[in-house]
Image 1 (cartoon, rainbow, N blue to C red):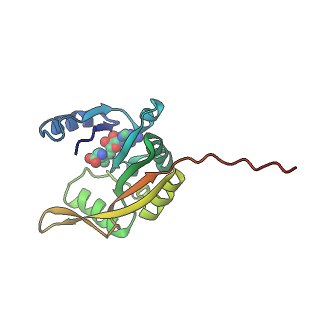
Image 2 (image 1 turned 90 degrees about the horizontal axis):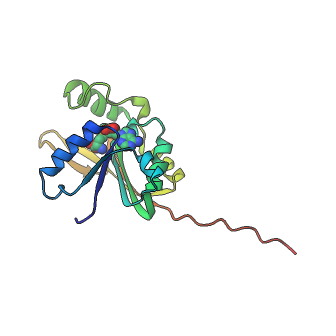
Image 3 (image 1 turned 90 degrees about the vertical axis):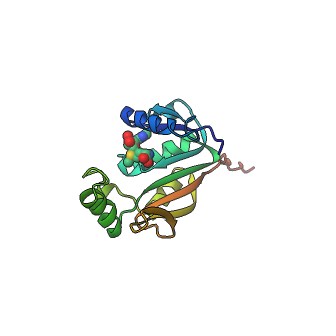
Length: 177
Ligand SMILES: C[S@@+](CC[C@H](N)C(=O)[O-])C[C@H]1O[C@@H](n2cnc3c(N)ncnc32)[C@H](O)[C@@H]1O
């Protein structure tokens, strides 16, 4: 779509695999990949029109701190997008038991129940990080077609889109004469 895209991951091996994958398609070949963290980019004072964090927040130790970093990386009125897995019984059955232990889509132990975040919790965390959630959607897998599609069902895999709030300077109370 014409955007200048920077892709990051904390693990060098993942960046190398992503670079090889992107290079095979002309529409992604111009992506610049860096092995770094969101937190380190904040220290470098980087900012982007849109910050997209897919399937990361459920792996971090401090979700609020991570969202504050995403917020710091987003320009005022810019877009922050986060996808993750909810903490629901259906998510436990499908995203953990089925995906990790039955279908072997992911290594066993990839996801920890206690680290999963519900859509309601994510809205509150993002609000505290100065990001106002505008829209959410679910990802639903159709095993007969072997396809994923967007859905209103946000009880398992879901994605949230928010806008970084513009800081308004606090108004000092007028001193009374
Ligand atoms: C489940 S993988 C998702 C990878 C990729 N975003 C995707 O959707 O395929 C989670 C990744 O988050 C990375 N990660 C964890 N904390 C991070 C941070 N603070 N900054 C950047 N990457 C981080 C890990 O190295 C890991 O590769």
